[in-house]
Image (tube, rainbow, N blue to C red):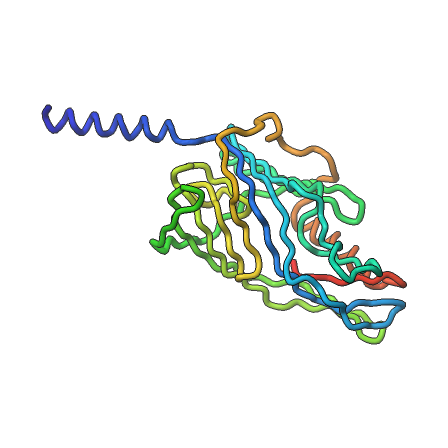
Length: 268
């Protein structure tokens, strides 16, 4: 066999291998978050010391992908307020994902829609798929039998912090830079994942954000309910900026009208 024939055969085998790679599937992730107190408890307008809290909270998420689309939703109810010593019913808000929240993406169209529930209202937050500057470190490891590559990035940002002092509410912005480490597998060439979707050439199986928020794949399947991967339609259509403005407004009203409720806010 001459060299030209060998090159043609090698190219053909590469094409067959790529075509055979997984394009549809389901991944279950454990999402763990450290609970970070951002404000003291308020009761009857008076500031009180916070009670002992669990150090972290974990829920399960599922990601379905296929037909150039992706859907993310949670598998378990939010139990962030159920912890020992919470007999007085302290409410912890701000864990970042409601029980019925859904994220849908269409990769080729570059569209993203978040169905979010906040303060008993439903929203459809529309946006484009974000892009960040990722750096491949060259490090590799195996996750659930898949060879993964490491990518890192830094996301500068700010977040709003609300405080109550002698019944006077103050609000300020503080720096909130995120150091992000991601492990993705080119063996599944779909840019899906529990976060940072549409940005890397492979399925994301693990994420670490500042060492206090992690996503870890615990199950990967080649089967997915493709009928469930559809754009959400329930809620008021808003942009990401409009949703953040409405959320901040409601949070301020909650702080002003806390009354006899005990409320503790944790980091985003």
